Length: 89
Image (cartoon, rainbow, N blue to C red; front, side, top):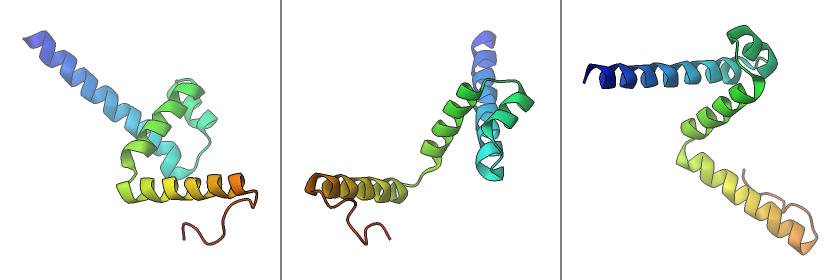
């Protein structure tokens, strides 16, 4: 039982570390390469953490707005007129 609790606590700390590392890039705008080097992880790994944090922190409305914008861009491309004007804002 003690080992399970330790493992659960370790996973919780690891998740918090990943979120904190991702927020360093997202909130400060610092380059991934600099932050990755500073904390001792690979750039690709940090990039995955950043993508996961952005997905986790997006509101459903933001996700829907992005989906609608992409849909209109696709329709515009199919029709041969490029992106439709006045969408998403």
